[in-house]
Length: 112
Length: 115
Image (cartoon, rainbow over all chains, first blue to last red; front, side, top):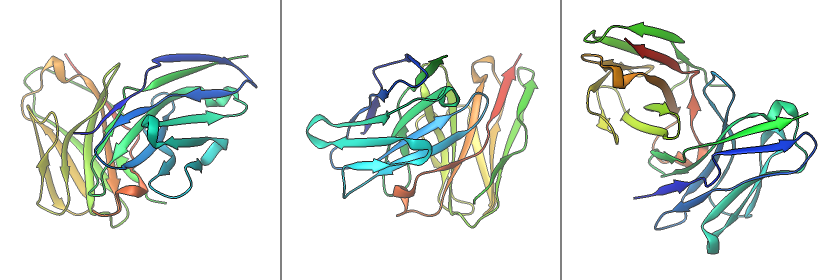
């Protein structure tokens, strides 16, 4: 069965600083990989996704993620964080049939 | 854009009550999912449905059932609510099986408190 690990429960960065959120997955083949963002009290919004092709994928809100097969990782990055990026971020592994497995989430706090 | 609407943002129910959580989508998505979200546990799949009148158990179906009588509506039922079912419930949709790479569209969630 697939699994997702987000090693960092909580990360704090200063506004304008760069950000990297880590995600490691376990799956027998190359899965679909996703990052979602959840603002307080809201549902999740898809930031970006990867299945094949270029291992560096661009998403909404200036985010990008890099798939590294050798490390089973799919880390999320942003060069310059804005205060509005404060939220909870979830990495997920998906199957073509539709089911997804989510990590436990990383809460991002942005300091002014 | 697909819109996924969960009828209640907040619900407070008593132990033992039968609780219905409703999810409606306004596009022709075949697949619908119910997850619960708890701090430190991420999202856990309760039930999902690939078609009308069709349902499959997820990872934590105990204490729950579902109904899908129409394509656009997927209901989660707590047969006899208990305090350990206090949680955020999230509905999600997917166009169809075989499009899993597109990712989910989520509703805004229903925060259920059982007292």
